[in-house]
Amino acid sequence: MAVSIRQVHPVFVGEVSGVDLRRKLSSDDVAAIEAGMDRCAVLVFHDQNITDEQQIAYSRNFGEIENSAGGNVTRADQKRLHPQMNDVSNLDEHQRPLARDDRRRLFNLGNQLWHSDSSFRAIPAKYSLLSARTVASKGGNTEFADMRAAYDGLDDDTRAVCEDLVCEHSLMYSRGLLGFTELTEAERVAFRPVRQRLLRTHPVTGRKSLYLASHAGAIVGWPVPEGRAFLRDLNEHATQPQFVYVHHWRQHDLVMWDNRQTMHRVRRFDESEIRDVRRTTVAGDAPTVEQVQAA
Ligand SMILES: [Fe+2]
Image (cartoon, rainbow, N blue to C red):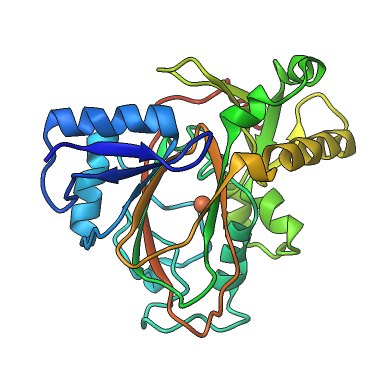
C-alpha cells in the first residue's frame, strides 16, 4: 500500500495513510513523506502503536537524532526514557504524575508558550516527532502555526524590517516569561543565548518563513524592549486562527512537524491524569547565522 497524504487545513497539515511505522520503510515511502513535510509542514499519522525503538528507527530516516541533553532541568537520575527520546509527559521516574510544584513540571509548562523546538540550540532542530502513548481524556491539544503563511501575510514594510534581523534565543527567556527564573549556574551556562535569523528560507521549496519562538528574547542591535515589543507583534500576527491547526490527540497518533516552518504549543489538561507523549527530534544540519562567542 502506497503512502498517501491528504491536506486537512487550508494552508498546511497533511493526514497520512498507507504506512506502518513499525516496519522499515522503502526509500520511495521516505521520499513521499519528506515531500509531504516540505509541502504540509505537519503530518498526522493515526493508529501507530510503536515502541521507543521503532520511533527512533523511523526518525532516523530523516537525519541524525538530536540528543535531549541541555533542553530541560531533569537530572540524569530522574530520566524515564533513552537519551534520544524527549520526555514530554507529565510523569516522574516512577511513572506517576509530577507534583504540582515539581521543578520539572514548572519548567515544562513553558511548552504552553508558542515555540519552535530547539531554537535555543546553535544548530536548531529540523523535525520533531511526537508519539501519543497515553492521552488525557480532555485537553492537552497541540496547536500548530504555519510560519510560511504568516510570512506571506505580512505587509511589505514589515517584511523589509524583518529581512536581515537576528534574534537571541534562550530557554531563560521563555521560562522567564512564566516567572521561572531560579536556575543553577550549570543551567545558566547550558541555556546561554544563541543567535537565529528571524527569516528562514526552506532549502527545498525556497519558501520564506518567520522563525519565531517564545525563546526569542532580543533582536541583535535593537534596544531590548523595542525588540521584544516587535517580536510580540509578530507572534500575535503569526498565530491568528487562519494560520493555526489544532490537533486533538488520539492514542497512538504520531505527529511530525518541521520546526523550520512552524511553531507549536500544548494546551492545559488535568494533570492528575497521565499524558504520556514521547518526542524524537531530528537535528538540523547548520546554524541559521554565525554565532558570536561570549567573551
Ligand atoms: Fe515543543
